[in-house]
Length: 15
Length: 102
Image (cartoon, rainbow over all chains, first blue to last red; front, side, top):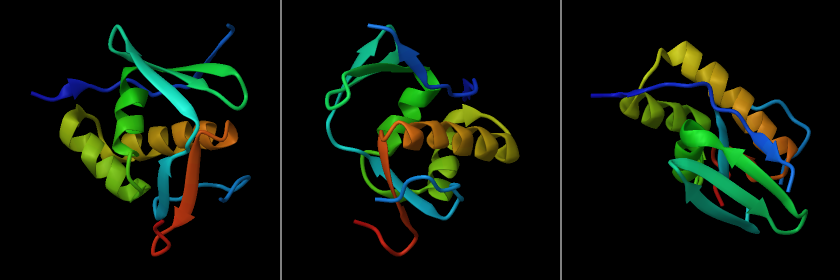
């Protein structure tokens, strides 16, 4: 069974 | 390395060096050492990142993702090109053209 697709995003973390 | 360009499906992409990557709760988190910035790629982004461990065309990348995920090809292409554009803007990937594999 295939996985659900979510639009990939690049989140910049404020560390 | 190519920067400031619009990516196409024929471009060959590969992970840039100098990043420390870790899995956190199924999501891929990355530290770019040279710039001291942290990124969260998420689950799908992490799968894309893993697939770029060796140079491959974006077209091939989309084919790999379509085997693993339930997604239309046109949607997958659009999302992947946009995501890779963000990675390129942050110097997280290196890009060549088909036939110029490293």
